[in-house]
Length: 365
Image (cartoon, rainbow, N blue to C red):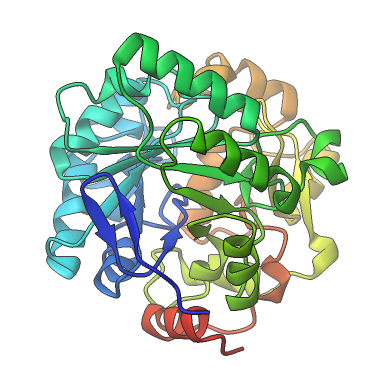
C-alpha cells in the first residue's frame, strides 16, 4: 500500500507518520528535526526542557541540578533553543510540539512553543478542553488533541465548537500499548474493548460528524504491516514513539537506548505514576528500590505536573517522576525511569531516521 500525505491544518506531511513526543530529552532537536527533514512529522517534547544540554538554559537550579519550579522545568529559553536547532536541521518543514495537559503552567508552555515556531501542538495526558484558549493568538498553529474514546472526542468537539468556534485539525487516538502515560485506568488497559483496533473505528466515525479531520492511530504501531492495518481501519496516519528511540539521532542518552535494547517482553510493565495515570516502561533497579523502600527521597522542587499536588502523589507512589526521568536523560540506569511502548522488547538495532522511515514506508523488516 502506498502511503498518502497527511494534511493537518495548513500543513502537509509527506509521510503520514508522526514521531511521538517523548519527554525529558528523548525527542528534542536532533530527533524531531531529522524526522521532519526526512518527510514525516517531528515532534519536540516540552517536558523537562530545563535540563537541556547540561541545564545551561535554566535560570536557577537546586538539589541535584534539577530545575527549580515549573518556569525552569519547562524552560522557555531552552524550548526556543531546541526549536532553533531543530529548524537548522529541517528548515521550514512542519514541526510540532507535544505539551502535556497535566503540565503545570500548560497555557504558558503552549504559548512558548508557538512563539518558538511550532506549527502544531499535540496534547494528551488529560482531555484538553481548553487547548484553543492557549493558542488563540496563533491562528495558524494546528491543534491535535489525543483521545482514547469516541465519547471523549465528541465531548471535546462540542466544547471547542461552542466555546471557541473551532475544531481539531487532527486527532490522535491512542490505545493502551503506548509508552509512558495511558488514557485508561490500570485494569482497563488490558480489556479487549479498549485495544487500538477496537477504539479506532468509532473515533473515525465520530470525526466524520465534525468535518472528517485526519485521525491518527497510536499505541503499539510497530511496522509497515501495522501501519497498513490502521489505515484499513480508517486511520489517515499513525504516531510511533518507541521505534524512534532506536535511531542514531534520538536525543536520549546511549544508556537509555541500551536499557530498551536489552529489555525483555516481561520487563516492560505498567507502573503507578504521580501523574495519576498508569505509565508503561522498563522494570529496572528503580522498581526494586521502590519495593524495598530504598528509592531516592521525594522532595518536589520542579512542580512539574498539576495532578501530583506538589509532590504528594509522588510520595504516595514512592518516586518523583521529574527526578527519575531526569536521571534517565543523564543515563543513570541505577535510578532512572525508562518509558517505552509494549513492543519495546522488539527493538534490536540502532539505525538512522532515514533508514527507519524507509523500512516503515516500504515494508522492509
